[in-house]
Image (cartoon, rainbow, N blue to C red; front, top):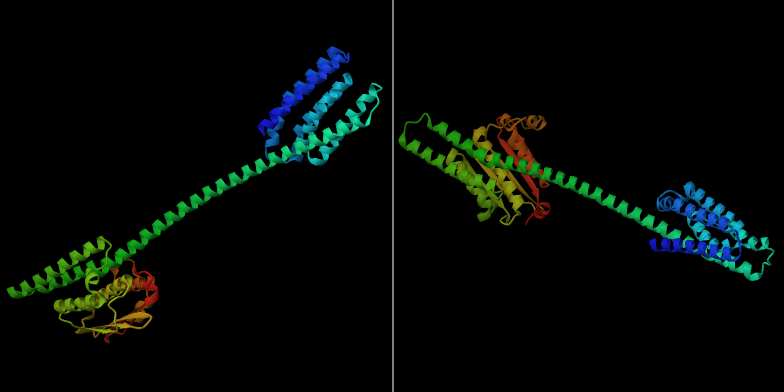
Length: 406
């Protein structure tokens, strides 16, 4: 585009020069000829930069009034020069180029026709005969100039449209980048919240329950003066503290429980029941129905945490003498049932009650179990009445939970 514009400038200056030289040879008034040529060039130079800026802008062609007035003035100055000398017809080619560039199609055809008429009528002023060549030549020149200028105008439009598309694409990319950053921040926040929830449940099901066990053992040793009894209680406290220390390191490292890593869920449950019997004297049994030694890690962790929380409730609140855990392979699901013969509680009232404001207010353990299981597509059912013991049933689908197996 820059090259074509420079060529147009050079062509117009050259044609004005040819017109002046031929006008002098035709004995035209030199002062009028020089004044007309200078006025034409000055008008052209003065109005061309703003007109070109308007042409490259996104203003619709029908609203480019300044460029039309500039072009109309240029034609008028050229007509005045044509009155001084008929040799000014040489400049008509540049005028056709400018008309085709700065005007829409219909006004361009009208303007080109006006310039063509002036070119064809100019020889008649000198009583010259207008031959066929004198008509065909200007007509062909006008058509060629219009074709070139319209093609140049289309190039300008395409360049403007490409620029608009590029700007739209850049804007869309910026919006997508901003949305991606917002989404990433939201995902990070969601991940932080989910991890906090998971850690709170893990701490409640392991460390908090272990500390509760230590507290109960310490309180149980207060009324005893028997050194052997106190020694046994201290040994149990030490064992429970050491186990909780290991579990605390596991929680901090966001790893699965050590029992699951080495022995699987049934063995881990059996160790929990043995610890319950040793600490509280509650008779505990484990029944395993089916081959459940290769469950997905997420399923094993969720079920083990559920069992830990339930057994902690049995030890602290139920006053039970017997507890039974049943682990069952239900085909497309695995079910964990925990039953005790303790004091029981109002399960319907618990289910209808709102969640406690804080874990210290009580009732957090069962809700944490249910929340953990629901995250994996499972469910927790609680059946209990005061004086009739408690039955918990946790169920997880193997198909969904299996997808999380690393």
